[in-house]
Amino acid sequence: MSVYLDYNASAPILPEVLEAMVSVYRNTPGNADSRTHIFGTNAAKAVQNSRASIASILAVDPSEVIFTSGSTESNNTAILGIEEYARATKKMHIITTAIEHKAVLEPLKYLEGRGFSVDYVKPDESGRINSETLLSKVRNDTVLVSVMFVNSETGIIQPVEEIGRALKKKKVLFHVDATQALGKLNDRIRNLDYDMMSIAAHKIGGPQGIGALILKRDEQYKRPPITPLMYGGHQEHGFRPGTTPVALVVGFATAMEYAEKNLDRNMKECQRIKDTFFDVIKDLPYTLNGDPNFCLPSTVNLSIDGLDAEAAFLCLGDSYSFSNGSACNSSSHSLSYVLEAMGLSEKRKSEAIRLSWSGTEKIDFSEFVSIVASML
Image (cartoon, rainbow, N blue to C red):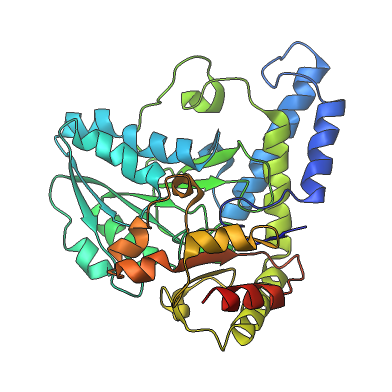
């Protein structure tokens, strides 16, 4: 069986999560909005308890947790939902980075077509955005800044704390895509200044199809001025209508509880795996893509001199499952726009691979090195 090394795309579901979800499917069949019988009441309690647990881990109020289908929907809601307010206030300028996930870049491209002005800040070769460069682009008509906490392709942590503190003083809305930071940088998430934050369950061993948009209230207890993308029932305070997927919500909370409880141990084990990996590949001609001083211990992106990355996926696929970047782009066979923004050469981009893992598995990289060496 192939060793799974694509956790940044989606993590295998945890046994504890699966067990909790199966219990809901078996024992809590009600609609959480059915108030006239105990099945509905039990479903509502399960959602309420899960929301409270997630909120506690994130150090927010339960009313600030809006469940969605995942980070793509959360990002779209945060970005597209600002349009009405932006037009009303005549603030139609947005700042983001050139290395965001497509779930941020594509909604912004849509808004550009509707008259918005968007600045895309590039990183340097380290993979990091310069916070001063980004903040220098803030204008009187800037309505929103959107920056990911951790890049999904490189694992590089962005300076969102500095950006958040500055934007709070400037009273500019700040959206953070924390999809890859969840379960890894929880303390930093809890202490971060932001207005909106996107997260998803399936990156931390939870089920696919569930995420959340955190809408922080300000000093006047007001949420960010966004309008919903869909209309229907009153679920999720009107921001996300539709029957609440109780089992998915419970699975999400269970995954977050597991990640929080095991965070330190998991990160230490991830670093041990990374150290082992670098020791095993020390004789290969590789170059790291991104500054290792700002990289998560669970991710490595590197270019191996002389390696055809596409050929490597085919040759190694039966033994090791990995990628060359975001799963949302891998089907296009195009070279990474993230590495492009970092200024890497065409050759280095074509030789780039990304491996990502969790601390819950034992990984033997010996066959990986043998096969790669034979391809050079």
